[in-house]
Length: 518
Image 1 (spheres, rainbow, N blue to C red):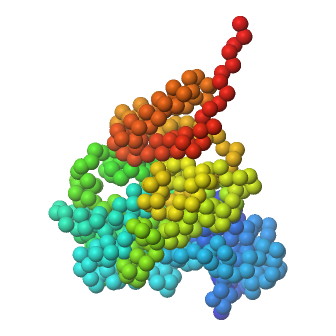
Image 2 (image 1 turned 30 degrees about the vertical axis):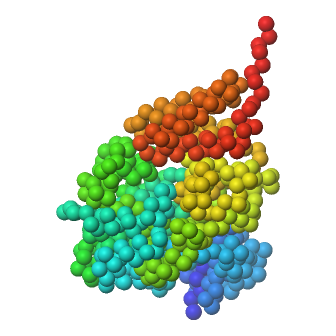
Image 3 (image 1 turned 120 degrees about the horizontal axis):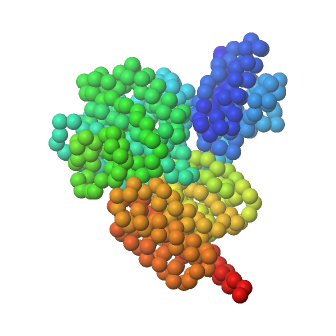
């Protein structure tokens, strides 16, 4: 029986030398005349162990990592192909605590299958959801998604089923499914991991969305900074089209749905759904006023579903296992699982899929292992560069949309960035304003001007210039931006600023300027 050795093709692993490792593995296989197949898989999400090399023996995967190219010959000498002992041996990968305790639904295949093998995808449960969707009415598909409690994983948390029903009920000669894969938040990489490690699950989810709403064309809008994801998605779409999963008759249903991969040009604001639509249409990425909602008048003025990668990739398991199965995970109105992306100054950074409800402290201390620097955790930012900073006093907050909102925070795309006690929260607040000023599309005054004034005001506080007056001014600017901005870029920038001021007041009270000697 042919032995399989897996070396990731995920961008995180590639940045750490995975291609060199794979090249050396292939060379060792050839030199030794071994009956071994090299598979380039996605990442398991344990980024501190990348590149993670795995060997499959009798249905079990034994892991070695992190592996450098210079380690490969020694691994073969130690009996890699039979799971031999070595200093880098981690044992059975599925038994590692970081993986063992997860609930992998959306990421069930990521790191396990060959990302570009449709046969491998089907062998691991793929296309079961689409096959069911083909056999039932569009309204029944929408009901299943609605009953599952799935909410938008891109940040807003809007119920996915309601959005789909609006498009299903809308009239128009053509409808569209747009996948927002413009993953621009700091500390987030779940979308990229799916596109690189299990692209067919996104294709399947989009096809189900098309069948559910009557849409016949889908677009995956992703970032120019994601060349590996773009290449994987483009190839996967071609494979799916040739296999009849996409095209004029999806899975022989007689219903058409096809997908096109589009690349953005690096504008953060194009992660906002209406700016994304403008960009897709070949226009400048500027936010549109709402109403009309994209569900009524979206891409090319047609009814359009816009969902995040993880939202769409969660749909196949819902159609396969049923709404009740998915809904049984989670808490409150936050149902199902959420892929936590743990990053920043943390010992065990990576992707951890689990049901909603874990406390923030549990995520940082137990799963993340505390800071990489060994210093105390000072703050955790959840929700990307526009997320609030939470101090340890709020680490009892459960990971839940409403629980975070109740404490003036937001889950966003579930990026969790850790900072130790050396972080200057005034500088972090200034960065939020500067980021907004740089990335603003410029359409609305509160965002365009408020962020610029925010940077200036933060600088005055840092210089000790009328600190009390300028703290009050910064608060007022945040209030104007939060309630006056046209979209979430300006509207959410106050979250990091105000949370930093509220929870870390000492960082906003620097030593006053020393008077110049006369």
